[in-house]
Image (cartoon, rainbow, N blue to C red; front, side):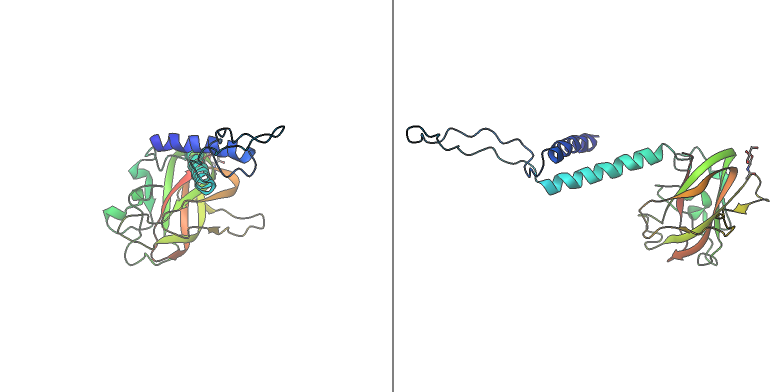
Length: 228
Ligand SMILES: *[C@@H]1O[C@H](CO)[C@@H](O)[C@H](O)[C@H]1NC(C)=O
């Protein structure tokens, strides 16, 4: 919390700073002590001014950090409930999984674990992770991550995927573009950073499935869907 307050303060300062045009010093310099008296009819010099407390680069970095934090908070308010646990464990299923610790329900955005297909299939495109949103839900996008910080798989993520959807698991259809071609979404490029993909149009359905196309290392996914 303290660091959040510090970030907000830095942000406010940074805004003041950018309005201040080319100031490289955050603290407004104190008025200098009067300088030596000038010759008759001339002003004296100005004495030394106050010290800078922060440098511009630090403030800009803090401001970028704050923007990332605000963006993540904004994104989180739209999540479908995979991250929060509103989607229950038994509402997450997969084509296969390797051990219970890599089961489908481990594939939650920002979670400690991740979903990982069975050993014989974790290098097989086509493996999928499905979320049951319990009723028709309007989904606008998907947010994915790789294996994260856990020791299981240090260089593992899905680099491209398709999404299928339906109100029944027997009638799933893959999202296509206007020409009817299946859309391949660009996925992750590291194990931690969130990647957000918006759907071409919001889709109302109960089941959503991420289908692996390409991956790095072994197929490993954490995700949530966006509802706004
Ligand atoms: C699923 O059902 C809802 C409500 O009946 C409907 O609005 C939606 O279009 C259906 N989705 C699909 C993919 O059939």
